[in-house]
Length: 394
Ligand code: FDA
Image (cartoon, rainbow, N blue to C red; front, side):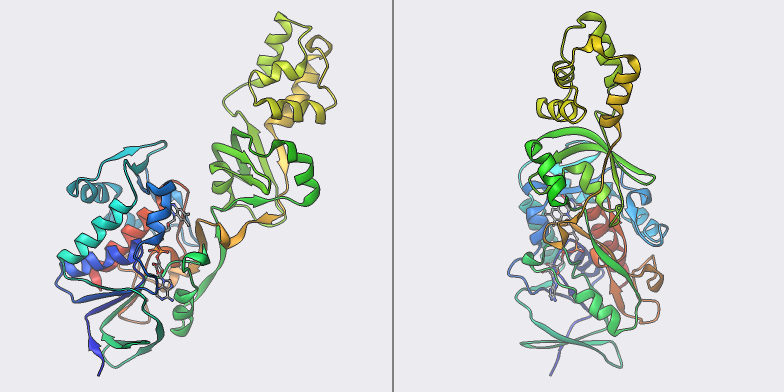
């Protein structure tokens, strides 16, 4: 005999737990199944252990999707302030770090505890270590067959996330279920991920490993101004993670270092004051020393006194710093990607409820859907908002 629940949610991550809370509030009997040993593992490790749980500026423009309009409804129905309200009710202290990014003062575990408390309050059941073998359509809904028994339900919510960080239990489960029920998929790829360089490029930048600097990272028409970090594997830091979602293999990344500083004007002023100063010394007053050395050596100008350089020569030299073109070899892939681009095609889903248009009772939420946020709390806001929308309907 199969057990009976109104709603089965597969995945006890951010989206699944939010959907459980909201469906539970409506009196639905909810069970959340997860194959992991603990719920919300990605919440636990997020934001360096402090969980960047939302972004107060979150809006449709901060998301990538084949249909940029799809996320509008859910984001409007559950805003960052709705989530902040829940965080405040649970007495969790938070702060804005930068650019509207909100973090817990103390620990990401506070967010997990909050969600579990809310689930308990509405009697949503959580089952961990669940090995799901199959999902079948029945006359009145769905049957979920797990290693230790079957559950029948009228609503089935797939909240099993994307492919990023397989070591933490990420699987392609959602995509398989989508395929089983005939829903189209948008090709997936790692996003918010460090970019790698080929061995020759790495060799030429080896002296720069560990250097961080403010930069504008550009791919095509999209640009982000944040920190750039050069590592022993390639390029990282928020500016690179952001642009990685837009970059495609074979394409360039254009880096403008110190985007708010007119380096050429500063070098010309330094030349007026002390023409005997070496270009490298003058540049090192603004850029990290190793970068100053790298750019002046690459240009063959490291010991050159400023007085030797015409305005034109300074402008040409600075162009290399303001428009540094790098062609990455690839990305670090799902092993380190924070999120997965692509996923369940939104054309197959109703944007108010996340229900599959052609399969009543089947819902997809969170990262497995083709809606991917920028770095900075946007992805959790999508998880909360899509989970909330489904929780009102499932
Ligand atoms: P999520 O991946 O959280 O949950 C899916 C659940 O399904 C997991 O518990 C998994 O075990 C379970 N599952 C998978 N396959 C299953 C199967 N076959 N059977 C049963 N269960 C299964 N975002 C942000 O906004 N702010 C931040 O600070 C960060 N920081 C961050 C750091 C790192 C290191 C990573 C990897 C990611 C982030 N993110 C982030 C992104 C954020 O973590 C992500 O967008 C959300 O966790 C997605 O929530 P979901 O609930 O959709 O999936």
